[in-house]
Length: 446
Ligand SMILES: *[C@@H]1O[C@H](CO)[C@@H](O)[C@H](O)[C@H]1NC(C)=O
Ligand SMILES: *[C@@H]1O[C@H](CO)[C@@H](O)[C@H](O)[C@H]1NC(C)=O
Image 1 (cartoon, rainbow, N blue to C red):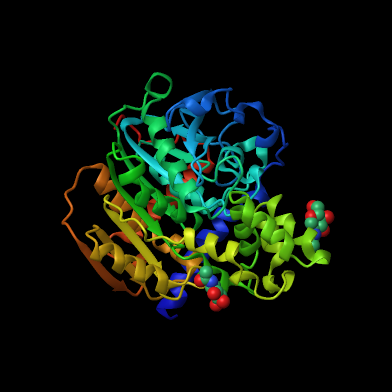
Image 2: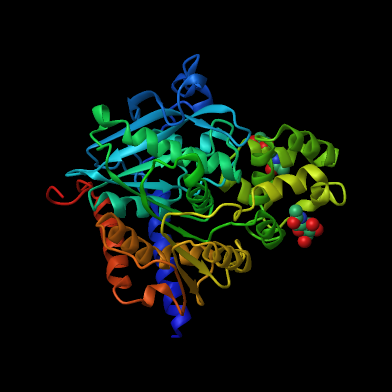
């Protein structure tokens, strides 16, 4: 068997394992109202004058936290925090983060985990899908990564960084949403026990890396007081147009309507433009992507030419070109250390723009360890790159010093790195144990 086949077999086994849930799990009632029908999400009047990151409201998670296999997670506590943040147009908005406390938690360690929501509808937000009563559509890979952190005793916060209008792919709304969720979590001590001085790291892959990367870029200007210890991001969509061109007519084509409609929910001029450019007989089908989640989008739009929904030259019209340009990463330089990983043959988020982004960041003084993976593709690297990212985050939270500057390395597959398989194995093992209802967290106080 070739190395490529071994690595892919391992990754697919993980995918199958983590996707096995719906088939074996007990049917879940949809007992939790959608965010759009849940008054918790509506901020109290006058909230606009509170500071970014201010806590507006908290509650214990209404329905138990959902696990990888649709079982409920045996954690110590989980809360939802409604907090004030700022959207891309500078307006005050309120959104929710889910904060999870494992058993034997260490109140001085927090991971901000950005799930790959990849959808433009409210009921796809993590705060909703992470609840078992929702019939949750969170990616099981995301849940596996979050479990790995919880099993270290870290608190995990998972923000609805797209905000109340689900502005999927909007960079500054997402980044600011992440930064303010961290402010809110650090201010939540009296409710959650998290220390206000806790060390914080960030992690996200693909759509989650978009939010993570924008948070890293905007931190020096938007939240300079936050002392973040580092951010890991993989498959980073630094240039939306590259993804549009890469996924059109392929299995991931549904990301395009979700992305355009997500942006249009932020920019009113883009919304009018999109609606005016849609071919009337196809508009309703296209607009479905503003009301459904990634799975339904993938099914509805698979292998279609998304440009066939539009008048010619849609992408070059000024509202579309401006939105794409404004949401390209690289106008700001992160000051926090970054661990970045990307598949050279990534078929969803092309490699070249991210490589260019790393070069730009590094020429402007960033601190980055960048791994280019030769064997993996987009989904595969989410799995095979996780162990290294996790090990790096662990070192940041433990205060292991880092050399300044940038390093770039090319590896056949990150899963073959020394120690990676061991870490990977324990991530899977813990995931399986969590299925059996084992209390999630370290066995003794960290
Ligand atoms: C759009 O969504 C509606 C409602 O869910 C559904 O009936 C319809 O089939 C969808 N359109 C397409 C083209 O899939
Ligand atoms: C996006 O890509 C298309 C197709 O390659 C191109 O025509 C368009 O000019 C690009 N737009 C931007 C804003 O880069």
